[in-house]
Image (cartoon, rainbow, N blue to C red; front, side, top):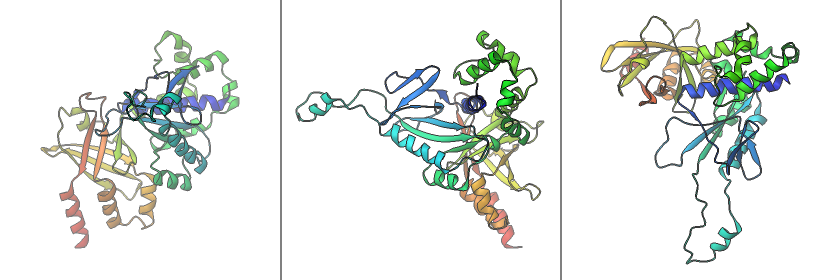
Length: 359
């Protein structure tokens, strides 16, 4: 097996688990517009049927809009992902969103103003969003193009440690060839299986392989741990942040929620590590119940701030403009409340701003 194929399947496995942890669910093929063949999921477009690396339903749908489905193209490249890859994602999005079955009978039916039936295929219609996921980073042109065309980007380096990323990049053909071929085939099938569990008997070899102390098993363990103990937050700009509980002994306010309690937050940063900010979340009804989460500032936002030499006043503007509201997916703790809304404490923010003006 080629190392690139296994790396791609491993990347898909991690991104799929991340989305499932946020409450996303697998799309079921309808065998017309979408279908499964040879363990792959295909979705039809105007030009061809496309292999969808990951396609999932979001935990909630917006009213007065067609339901959405999310597709992620997974690119397990060792180098930085450039503009052509992201541009292809836009082409894919246009191709599948514009596709519609139009038969000759339906076209002829339009000529009859008194026809009894509509010239419309009876089916569920969706708005597809297409994103790109990778191991390392995206180039500046790729980020600019994605931002301007509303294409979500996701990198493992945004929430996995540098050692895990290094292990991922170290997977090469020599390493794959050093393992038993049947083990690699079984682990590949497990990574590609959208519904399979490692405890299933058919993945017995994969289970033993991932617990044998090799770097592939280390990557899976690290990713599963990070996903299990983190939350995905979505900004109103569409940027994604991963919230990690900073204190293991502190109670977790997101786990303890029993209702739609109004959540507010303060955001702090430290000069020793300016790209990691701290989100202190509290229940506005009970100010003593607080939990600290750390998160990496999205690169494009940090680069904007860096142009102003990490100025404190600009940081306040960024908090107000980009982090005024954070949607946190929380379905694993409460299926009835798939997400929580955290609003920045405007009173606290105004006090900080006033204090800076008086300095």
